[in-house]
Length: 482
Image 1: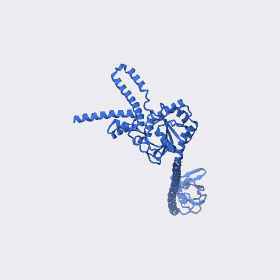
Image 2: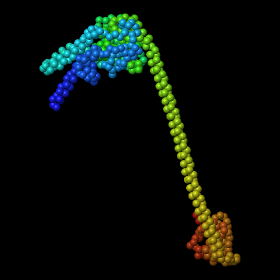
Image 3: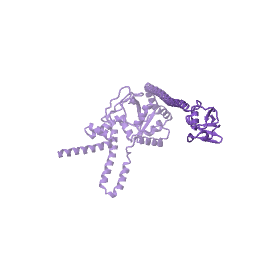
Image 4: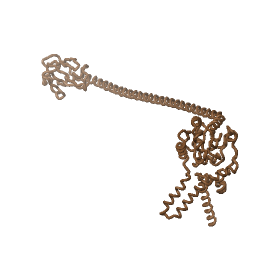
């Protein structure tokens, strides 16, 4: 079991070394993609490298329509890019497999360049292990200066901007409007804008590069046409993005121009030109390819416009529906508020009516009680009058032993009666109480001058003793005694 574990660990270390070498040689940065490629080739490093460099790639040409497999980053090494039929001269634009003796030198040069980079890295590691720590700084800087001779892999967007800057510094600012993005982003923008994408792969060391950039690519007619009609992306062959694209396009020489289309997530190479070609030939080839693709571009743009119109119509309908819903909701909320307010008013009205009814009922009860009280008082007063009238002695005839007393009631009524001088004041009280015009239950007797009140404590006095003979008596009452 221990021997099996040791063998497994040894195989894993060997595969890690192969993976590191493969990534350094091919300049690929995706570890998962590289592992898959090596696994397909049973971890045979030589076969995997040959596949990436183009020796083992199937060179079958795509369908005649010009629509080939996707050229996105996800299908980086899946298959070569489909090429459309050449729009111009067949010897230049037709896809013809190159003989092995022509492709071999190019691939050997690429392999030597990458191997040199890998050798410098390995040498740096060896030197760091062998040289004492105090001397590593100087040696390391020397190794780094050697390694700087080969451009390291760059970020795609940074590499594109670096190419644009170098191109302007070398050949001037009269140049196509190169997109400062990665190739994938440029292809994505072309698909979104429904435009064709022209790619230019730049090799600074090639003998035809300077003349092509100066005379053709910087030509006023070419610059104006490309900037108005196409999207343009350029990359230096030493950058990872341009190197990988050149491998997929199977570039055999430089400078390289390719015209790509992106429809329905599929990328096709419409035409390609290699070498130092003239401005007229470049424009003629591109114009012919664009003429061939014109109906597809018009159809694609019409489809996009239809989809945009449909989307705008749907959005307008959704907006109108939302507004209608909002209006209905506002109307319903208003109705609910109005119903609530109406119910509140009805509740308040019912409450007021109930309060008024209660007040009226209380008033009716009070009135009834008052009427009962008045009736009871009237009944008592009537009984008292009868009783008092019966208790009065018979009115005597005029004589020296009698006197006539005038009684003035509170309502202004005046009554006279003759009394005996020896009658008690009680007799006067009984006389007043028997009068129909008296409306009070309680009262008292008083004289006007001198003013004197004869209350209940004087009831036993005689008229003579009280000095009331021949006088006028005023009946005093309080309203509470009614």
